[in-house]
Amino acid sequence: MSNRVSMSDVARRAGVSLMTVSRVINEKGDVHPETRQRIQKIIKDLDYHPSAIARSLATQRTRTIGLVVPDVSNPFFADITRGIEALAYAQGYHVFLCNTEEDPQREISVIQSLEEKRVDGLILCSSRIEATALVNLLNRLPAAVLINRRLDDHKSEDYQTVFLDDEASGVLATRHLLQTGHRRIGYMAGPATSFSGQGRKKGYLAAMEQAGAAVNPDWIIHCQPTVAGGHQAGLQLLERCDELTALFCYNDLVAVGALQACSDLSRKIPDDLAIIGHDDIPLAALVSPALTTCRVHRQELGARAVEALFERMKNCPGGCTQIVLHPELIIRQSAP
View 1 (cartoon, rainbow, N blue to C red):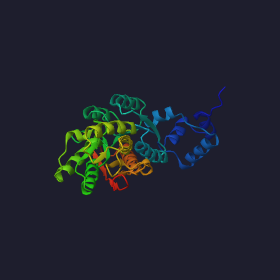
View 2 (tube, rainbow, N blue to C red; view 1 turned 180 degrees about the vertical axis):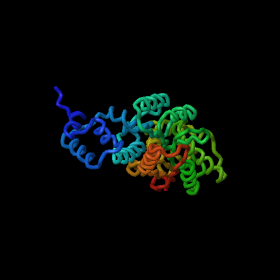
View 3 (cartoon, rainbow, N blue to C red; view 1 turned 90 degrees about the horizontal axis):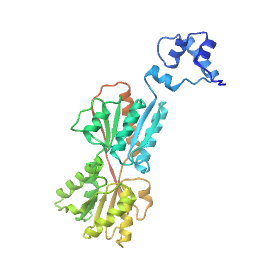
View 4 (cartoon, rainbow, N blue to C red; view 1 turned 45 degrees about the vertical axis):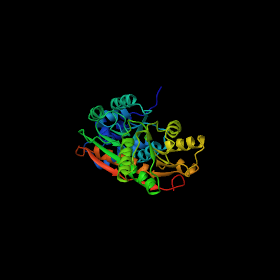
């Protein structure tokens, strides 16, 4: 037999109606301050825990937010997640973390599932979903914030985006390589569906054009954003384009894979090939040679996103607004 305390027990002890207890729990309606304090003390004394389901029905809030990331094992997204969870927890919210494994169809399914779970809001990292389909999904949610994805040509009723200036990253990395004497620079571009990868490619091409350096299309290769993906693509790229003297990589994991490829091919870093990564995850400073990379302040990215989401959840006016963060070049041994 269950000894669980009920709302009726609280009401009976306080000498008030169930409705009055409900108003105190859900912070609704007018309750005399002394009565409110008495009920709150009884709730504490009895160790009463309201049903989350019942409370969500009364308040139309679940105190949960959804967080969707393409690869939870990537330190970049792990750091963003930590920033989001810390702020959400401080505000009394729980985070449903969902990993999509870089699969757009799985991402759609996950978002639909979070909608069914009635999350109060959604933070979507580096979405791979086609723009029109993504907007349709966002418009069904009470509030949403995108990280590292823009929808410039589409209208959504209620979303905000927090993103790194990826084009600036591409320019920053490529310009550094150009200024240190390189002209034959390759780009390891990550997934073709990556919005960030597309932005970095634009920056890479712009910097090369501004310097009057020709780009051979064979110097650009797409790969999975992992060490294994970078290793495989690095071998393929360097074997077909042995004239390359430098690489700009989509992220640090790809860059570490490229370092391994260079080791396999007996190419010395940075004497034979300079390499620049992106993100400045902890591994970047630990590998040998340590990676030159574009630093992203990942926890700030997550914190700004969750702050924006809470503003949306307070029924602030809709419409798309953008928060832009800027990269910082960290020079180490792989491209001094």
